[in-house]
Amino acid sequence: MSGTAIVADDDDDVRMLIEVAVRRAGYTILASHSEGSGALADALALDPDLLVLDHAMPGMTGGDVVRALRTQRSDRRPYAVLMSASVDLLESTALLGGADAHMPKPFSVQGLAAMLADRPSA
Image 1: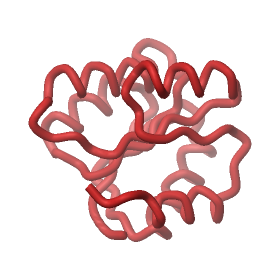
Image 2 (image 1 turned 90 degrees about the vertical axis):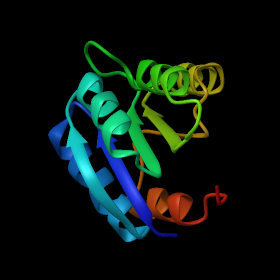
Image 3 (image 1 turned 135 degrees about the vertical axis):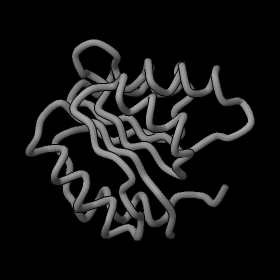
């Protein structure tokens, strides 16, 4: 898989690990954020192929970003992955918010990279 990605997680160390996984899966990272509103603005402006978002960020959550993007950009739908330590919340939010996949935390870099590399093509 190759393409472009935007990453958002409010934990700097976790965000760095997500970035490693995204690059290993063959993506170029266009932007990396510690909050959701910046991720949404860049997703609207940069038109990435992939979003990997923490669900529980202060302010705009990853689920909020996905819902807003799906509403504002119905012509283009990047593949969206939500991540969270709360598996029950993650599954329901991912499904209701329009995310394409979800991954619980903690996660392995190898596992996330494999999931992203094997994702269905658009």
